[in-house]
Image 1 (cartoon, one colour):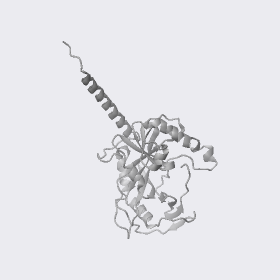
Image 2 (cartoon, helix red, strand yellow):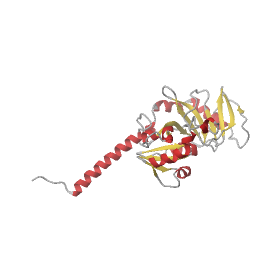
Image 3 (cartoon, helix red, strand yellow):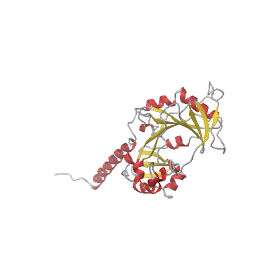
Length: 288
C-alpha cells in the first residue's frame, strides 16, 4: 500500500522550501554590489567589496597614513569664512601623534539614481549599488576619530578620496547583519538596512525618512525618495539653475591620488591640491 504524507510532513516540506528560498534571496542580496571575496565570517560588509586586496593595501599604505596624520594635525574649523587656509606640510606627518592603524575597509552602498527616478525596479540589485569604502582608525587620536574614504579607480582598484572627521560612516557600515545590506541615503545622512525587500532605519534621519515607521517595503521606500529627489537629480532644472549640485553619490570623487578631498566635520573641508593642504568650509547642498 502506498504511503501518503502526513500533514506534519507536508508542513515540514513547505518550511524547508521557504528556508531555501530565503537563503537564496539573502545570498543574492549580499552580492548586489559586485564580486565577492573570501571574507571572515564576522565581517558581513566585506563580501560586497570587489578588488578587496587592492582596497586593503590602499588603507594600509603609508600614503593614506600620512594623509590621515596631516588631517589630524589640522584643527577642525569652528565657524569662520569660506576662504581657504593653507595647512603647513611636514616631512614626517605622523611625528608627535600616537601610533595608530587604519582598520580594514567596509562597503558603503547608496540608493541609485534610477531607483530615485522611479525607472529602476524596487529590487535590491537595482535599488542600491556600491558607492565607496570606509575605514576608521584603530584608536582615537588626541580625542578625535577619522574615517578614510576610498573611491573606485577606473579600470579597477581603489584610491583615496577623502578623510572625514568622526567614524559614524564606518560604524553604520559595520552594522550589516547576515542576509542584510546596509545602505545610505546621503542627502539626509540616513542609514538603513535592507533585508530581502524590507527597509529598516538605523538612525534618526532614517526613521524620519520612513515617516516614523519601524520598517517599510522597498517599493514604498522608492516612492518616498522619488518624491524627495526625482526632480533634483543631476541635469534637472533644480541642478542647472544652481540650487544644488544635483543628485550623486559620495564615491564620485576625482581619481587622482594627488587631489583627494579631506572632509573635517559637518561644514569644513581639507583639500589636497598640488601637494598643499587647504582648509575651507564645506558647501552644504540639500541634494549631493
